Amino acid sequence: MDFFDFYTGKCFDAYLYLGAHFSDAGTIFRTFAPAAERISVIGEFNNWEESSMQKIHDGNFWEFRSADARPGMMYKYRIYDRSGQYIDHCDPYGYGMELRPNTASIIRDRNAYKFHDKDWMKKRSDRRTEPLNIYEIHFGSFRKPSDEPDAWYNYEELAAPLIPYLKENGYNYLEIMPLTEYPSDESWGYQGTGFFSPTSRYGTADQLKAFVDLCHQNGIGVLLDFVPVHFAVDYYALAHYDGTALYEYPHSAVGQSEWGSCNFMHSRGEVRSFLQSAANYWLTEFHIDGLRMDAISRAIYWQGAPERGVNSNAVDFLKNMNRGLKRLHPSAILAAEDSTSFPGVTKPTEEGGLGFDYKWDMGWMNDTLNYFRTDPLYRGADYHKLTFSMAYYYDERYLLPLSHDEVVHGKATILQKMFGEYEMKFPQARAFYMYMYAHPGKKLNFMGNEIGHFREWDEKREQDWSLLSYPAHQDFHRFMTDLNHFYLEHPAFSEKDFETDGFRWLDCRSEGPCIYAFERRGKAERIAAVFNFSGVEQKGYRLELPDVQKLHRILTSDSQIYGGKETQPDLCLLPEDGSFELTLAPFSAEYYLIQS
Image (cartoon, rainbow, N blue to C red; front, side, top):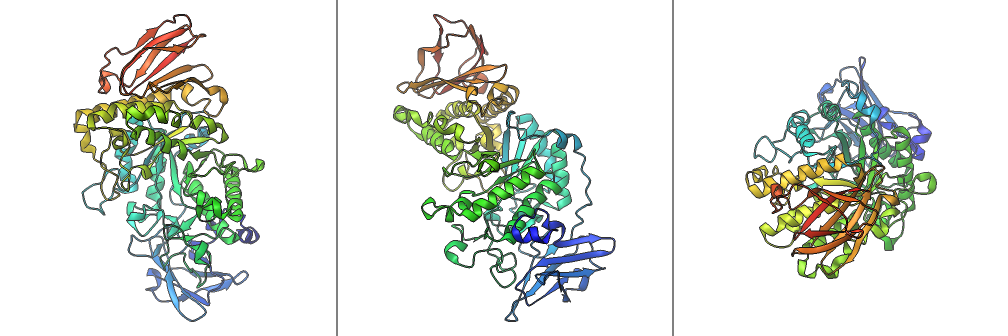
């Protein structure tokens, strides 16, 4: 490790020096704790008796070597502050931890697992001109071996049901909610204590590597939710690590987040190096294909509030981290969860931007879901909620998210959000999803959305797969599967996602009947998408396409096989005076292949 880089916030490999490192000669422990009075290592290898660490380098680092410490053994750092008091801490750079509520770190052999995914790693890309269809999961509640809250499949075990499901259902990427160790199940991993430790709820680091390896061998990319803004307040972890505010701000006004966790102090080089090294660790050591970075607005602005001003140090940290990660991993995906209008989130850092590949389009998500909550009788007044997204779309490279945050805390699930009673929700949801998949931008859906989940997500319970015994949910699941595969197979919906000639409005002025139409273009394919979001049939609707010889309908949400009423599987239309006359079912969407 370059110590100058570490102190100045330029280091991306601090985990190779700090932490517990095993070799044939034993294990060497190192930690960074400049304000500590003294530190001992306690663990299984010394019967939890104190073994004194020695100051090394410039006196800010501490080291201990043990010939008896082996992988699988537990340990802690007993850190004495200058008043003589001590706290037993887990290792900030530890590669493994005990299952909560226990708090010890665990020695791991970082080099034990050998990957078999060379072909995948060689060909992967950031998917900018390719389809990116992400299935977001919480690892412990996709499926469970029993109804017990603490019953989980381990990393390798879940691969058996999950990977075939992803392939069959048309998802080419998986996004996993945070797997860095965390103490409270209810935090879902967003308040971490072990930024280099895969949570022991689901097994070991090698088991997670095996899971990622299997995904890659089956053509599935893996993204990980990463939290670079805040961490858990628990006494045994990063908070007041050396008896002082080493990782966090010393003042509560900016030191504590809205979630009650500690904010990282991004102005400190050592903190930047810690977070950058953690991000690089997951991409390098686990072959993770990208990171979704949580709560970026809280880094851009002080406490996430634009009126409090830009946090220039945190913004500089984001730029440096993304620049370094893209240098090390050019084909990895970096996505920002950011609801602000801060400019340049996906602009390259050399052009003054933050350097993310994608930004979550929270505006599109909120406007669209609010539109579909509205009584169809009044949607005309809200018509331009669905046209507004294209007014700003080319400012950034966007990803359209329907994540876990939209199906919890009294918000209702995606299907439940649709206006009306049970039967009325399904045709609207089908039309809604066809709108989403035709709209420019990459796609993300949380688990359960594809089966029309009705119960809000609960991290302690698996998804309600029994819904698939009901015909309406069977039909909806079939629809979502076909739509996903359609998206993957038609380049018009992804090839020019971020080029202005990849999208063209055909009709964005039919406020009364709530009809929308637009065209998506790839290099060799054109598709027209037409939507009737009113609750009545629209007869004699004329679609103006003067340069088109024929329309071939290739997908309709109102098909009988999806629970609709349309029995004709496809339809070819010839123009009349440069326009096509269509009849649109209530709450329906249709895709047409354009032949010119």
